[in-house]
Amino acid sequence: MKLFKKTPAVLSLLTATAMLLSACGGGATTAPTPVSATPTAGEAAATSTTGTTASGGVIKLVSSLPRTGLSKPQTDDIVAGYNMALEEHGNKAGGFDIVYEDWDDATAQAGKWDPATEQANATKAANDPDIMAYLGTFNSGAAAIAIPILNKAGLPMVSPANTAPELTKPGFDDATLNTLYTAGP
Image 1 (cartoon, rainbow, N blue to C red):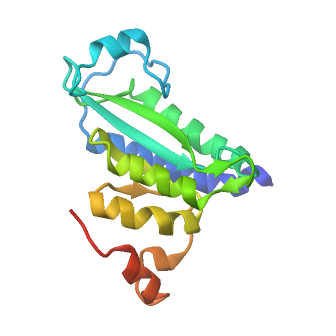
Image 2 (image 1 turned 45 degrees about the vertical axis):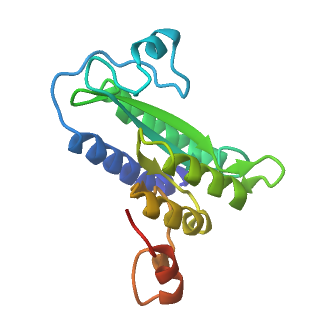
């Protein structure tokens, strides 16, 4: 029964990731390669100081999910879905290399997502010009912290799990909604 409860969320996540990768372009792909948060020595050597490679460049995708604490089993499935989608495309989109980084927005002490950690993750992503999408958050409270930061930077956020309608739809809690999208690029 537990598997069936997770299936719609995992399918939605895979669909969103596939759509994101498809939108970046197509073409021939190479054999799948492992995805890691830290580039290998060869990958680092192939990347110049501007973040481009001979194939066209590097696009970074980051996730900000509770990777510590009670939600870890659920976010393990989400991260596995991201990695599977990337591997199926050979970590490429068009002429770009796709690098995925798995960030934790939880702390061991709290055992769940942490507001200060989520704010730091969103700020770090907003300040990195190579990051093209923020995959997360897992919790609506964390999203309410990340959205204004990412919106100001023009960085899209795709959430696998947020359910609070006031994050995106008028008529539920317009006071909250109006504070999230105050500025854009």
